[in-house]
Length: 496
Ligand code: NAP
Image (cartoon, rainbow, N blue to C red; front, side):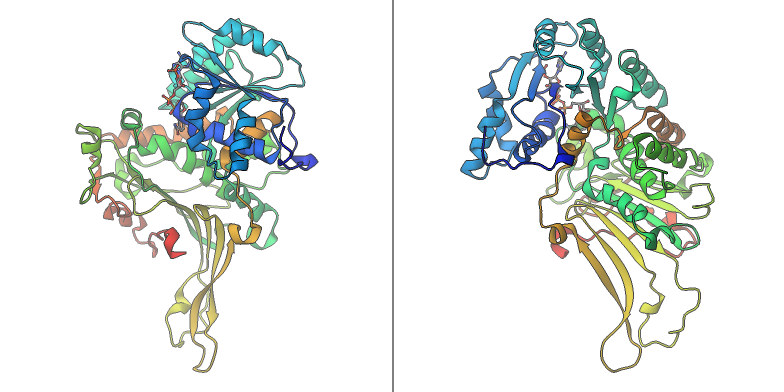
């Protein structure tokens, strides 16, 4: 094996494991899972004792699979090419049909050859959720659900609370909750983990983190892409199910949760669950005060959602909503969240707007900046970082002239190292047996139970059409009502 790959610190070591990617030839595997495993191989976390299995119905050789995977692994140098060739030596292709059962015996033989309770065997279901039950049953039938077996699944985990419950019953019939890892890849992002460090390792923010000091919170997850080949799936789900129920709810939980006593999986997840359970139910008879839905209408050379889909549809590609968390910390503080496709640019930000000073001693200042509040902006992607907006005195003569300034912590500049993709972190955590950044079943259910009535009430509302390349329908402004605030658009990469 390569001499180029670095030795890794003791704390980063993970046990030698088998990763079995069921659906390993699909889009998720090629774009995300295997490139992440390759990066961890380059970093030295995966060594030559690991076995990586691509399991799917289609038969192909390792060389053919390497040809499919290569474009997603950014092999810029000869050294990268040679590392990739070494990485591919860990890969086995095992034809498997989880419905018919073909190939399961060979897989069982392969896995049992190295079976050992200290060697995690990770089954990642990169297949349609409609096949999750069959896949679990098949693994069980062939004796593959051993004490060291772990199951990884990811969205969509149901399309409402009833179907999410059914799906979960199918997983729990075979795997215990302690061995189920439900990925929400937002939780694996470095900046999202940093949000917890920011809150719970620094006193300056945590003492201000409540309704006495915070005016409101905004969470924006803007995508610039449209359907990207996922039309059939997306049109059945829409932005509320595809983004709000999972990613944005999880971000909301991390912003709003109480500090756990310890940074341990179930303690963190208990606190997130409390946030979800404290959400004020929507008044669905007054939906438009709390919810705006939209659909992109296209642009000059850009097809509209319906044109891209090839049929008429009421599915929302944009959602903005206003939420309240009914507990002592957050009573009265609005949380505004929005997400959409074909927006101006791809950018995700959490903006904490603090209250203005209770008395303005600069009332006769030469500028009106004295009335601007402090803001903490947590930039999740791209160009991860934190910005704290402050009001300062403009240097030089001319009286007390105030202007807005920023303390800027760019992760790129501060840490000067490549930030790992979320899947890299999460895949290593599964081998480590650390469930902190994965969703527990009751969290998934609580998020669905909150969203179910909103989704069914919104089914009767026609989405506002917005131009592609904008920041969504103008009607989103009305969510602020009498509250003196407005949406803060994330700045684009080029502006930074
Ligand atoms: P995909 O490209 O359609 O791939 C599906 C995979 O499942 C293929 O490898 C397919 O290979 C395999 N498969 C289908 N039927 C099978 C069977 N009976 N037995 C064994 N393997 C079977 O789908 P995807 O986009 O990768 O998505 C996979 C799952 O991840 C879906 O649930 C999706 O919603 C979820 N997801 C995907 C993304 C993404 O970015 N793509 C993001 C989040 C979540 P064969 O046809 O050769 O069997």
